[in-house]
Image 1 (tube, helix red, strand yellow):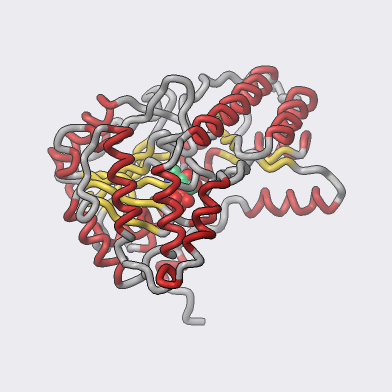
Image 2 (cartoon, protein in one colour):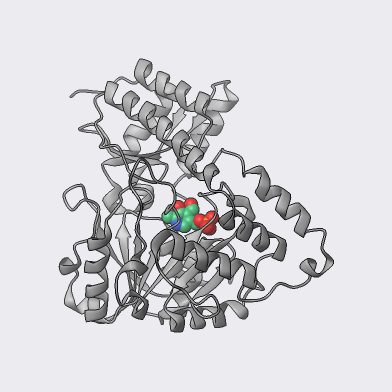
Length: 391
Ligand SMILES: Cc1ncc(COP(=O)(O)O)c(C=O)c1O
């Protein structure tokens, strides 16, 4: 066979395959599985957003090919959101681009900025798309380890000089998936100083920027003076408004990078369905009480799960953002062993840290995006049934 291409052929096998096989077997034998592996919000898309989508879908001109770069209402709504939330001014025409979900833009920014053989600096562990998009662009990646000791923030000075010379892009992601780590503005300043010194563009993935708890407010990297010279920021409506299936996101910041990305996009896709863009603009412009309510629900689930983990001896600092818990596996287990043991003892699926990069070894991720009654059932099973091997 002459297919697939070498590019596709090098993509590693699906890391969840083993767990999915076990899950299927257990369901077949009648076991009630609670899946805390997925990161797809269970909470409904607020009604006013769905109603707006339905209304806009009745207008014939909205059903034509959409604009490549996004409709002006959506881009203006993103610019207004940035001014309101972060005090950052954006020109909606040149500094905002609509995306078919932020994943699409994250995947496309890589071939926009790198040539075959170039390096991309990637947090480890992180959202697997950064790594896979780099492989698909025939690039190479350098893993920047995120550890408890470095507060899940890369040590920029540890990156070897010879790698820096060939690096054309750095990804960052806060609040982080899977680490749930958050940062304050001084970290972004340090990152921008480093990027400007070494002329390496930064793509900050802020998919969870509005999923935050208590008084914590996630900063935008564009709040750093001069950030627009070297950085772009990806954002998404998926998590904030439970709109994962809508497929709508955006990228903002450096206008040259955005222009280059729009050239690549205009030759590969045709923009998101206009009624979806208009519904997304409406979501951003409307009353935000749904966001506060959803965050309260995630926080309650987080507290319940942290409590369950504590009862089996696993201690985690309460995260300030995202709907994930990133927790250390007990001594003497690998990530895969612990996840398998929890599944066998309780029927609860959690994700091994190694699914997100080699530095994920020793950790597991719990997603809180399942209905609260199921989440509480999982907590009870963990409390009652998980026995940790001691030798
Ligand atoms: C860190 C991170 N970035 C980006 C995305 C992509 O989100 P979307 O394409 O729905 O905007 C996800 C989705 O899970 C994510 O976890």
